Length: 335
Image (cartoon, rainbow, N blue to C red; front, side):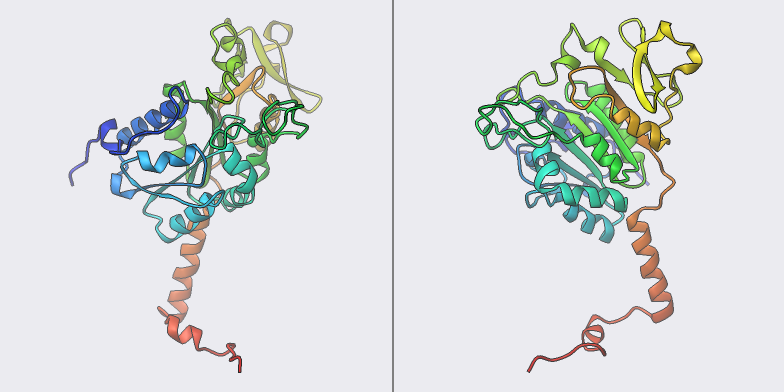
């Protein structure tokens, strides 16, 4: 058997990329193409499915199979495909407006079912395609065309939402950190079940520098909390800060002020710890966890459950016949 070796160029389509110059989507696209080339996934077995929005143009720019589907429904379309064709690598791409608003219901049910799909949510905290209205992740007080006096909507915390929906894999990364993004994509692909990846993405036209606390040279070292399974959670330019549990919550302290044993050791299989970490930063204006917040492979996937039921039914009742099923007892005729 011959192993196919790809380059990033093999995953670049012939379509002209039509995002705004300087958009963070370009870097994410490059990271995904770089990951796909190194992953060993056969191009013909990869599918990218999107809803509506700037990020939803993603399938056009990947030289794989893909579908630009319906607003918010990409997780539902992907669920059907992944269940019917478990041999495929199915990826969902969407923005915070697509997945946290009209598509919120489809997102949470895909996660709780643990369908074997990989969900990439580009979070720029704004509706970019429709020219800059506040989104479900925009901060309170956000001034936009649709909120000239400042938004009074309390925003979603996407990571807490995903964990609350029983996500078995939840991680966060930054558009401009290609190396870290590729590492997270590798882990998401290796995970058996739904993988939710939040990617902070700069919209340089309608919400520029929304993540400056994590990307700016002055503050990024003091605000990026890189999580590593099995290692104490410390951060800062000189690792002078740490995270501990205090009064039932994850809390940031000066590392020198506590005993080393009090510092949390990251356990990505621990749901309680994952949720506590998701509450550390409701919006990236201060120290924010990055990396794999939760990964638990112990739950069976939805696709495996459906396949097992089909095998059991065929073993006891045979292959079946759809025509016979439609005309079987229990049907009735309208006269």
